[in-house]
Length: 163
Image (tube, rainbow, N blue to C red):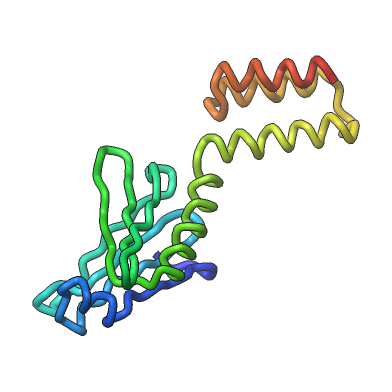
């Protein structure tokens, strides 16, 4: 994963030390771009780096468990798997959570549907130079192509016909 807008967070040794992680050469690293969150950690033998990559479409939630010192980030993904990443300050953990929530929203169907509804609304309200039948035809193509489901189709169809 190498992107121009990639953001990297590195766990602090002090917070990891409090959790019982004595090895200063195995920090947890989180890299976030607009599609995935990647968790990297050098293995205990210092030979290679273990990596877990989660696409935001498959993430169900991000939790931050705050202790007296530091915080643990819990990433829950589809398939009941989760990872716990320790060693971040509370402020950094909150920043990671906020950033991930934004990316999760834009990468899920709900985010796609909101964007689609907004685009259709703008096209209809600005006149867009297209007729109602053209808009309905485009909407049907999205349904047939699998970009939206039947319920979303009906909702957008009602919006178009009511305007």
